[in-house]
Image (cartoon, rainbow, N blue to C red):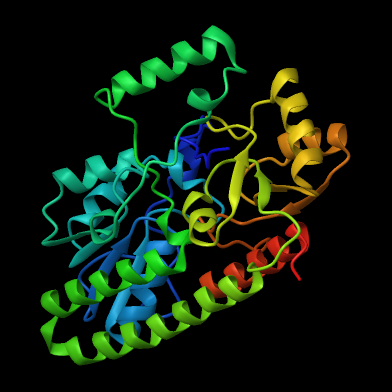
Length: 328
């Protein structure tokens, strides 16, 4: 069995969600502008980058985010206002390949400090559901071929690195170094904050290693394949219902295949997430006699999130995995 991932989903984001840079972090100023404050102004592409900027920057940064709470980040489209304001920031922190619209805007932006989180750790190829299962027929194969062509013939690497605390810590260290270089007056504080964050992430990693060391099964089902790095880190196997579109209905052949695998591997639970429909997961769960629960890919924090921040949600994810996998 291969660990799988999803490409950019097909969920449409309406123009109404492109509302400007929007909600500020808890440590940011009252201004809604991305730049021109008396602090180090950072634009973050989506929540995991926002969290890093807040934790490392502390009181010295004004953080704004391009992706509103509850907005599916893969499909983000930027308004003209957002694109213009990005150029006024001191730094932009993003994860290249996750949000094509952001990548394009940053490439055309004059912002001085561009921090690509993907360059601060090693991205991996966790495969694609269409390669591993021909349950979609020729239509899926053609659709996949078109995507491959659009990406220059190369399969995209899995961008979901923030769900592995170890890789996230590597990114945090690189972000801190970039902040220190761009804003040397506060370099000592950035370094201290990064060290404090590193301890939090190390504690999270230890909790996952200990909590998932002995389980009844190592296999878990997800609505979309965001958890490849997490699965690899802790010796688990992720099975995604749909790699391409988390809201599409799985084929009867795929349902049957997963039913058989659930029995063979002792799978008890189908996980879904908070930012997309749970319809697919519940369809499989009903047909296979399985439970459902939330495994949050942490692409955004909302009032539905089982935690107030990255660490809180990751702790909730660990509890969900421990229960589903039968941790000892």
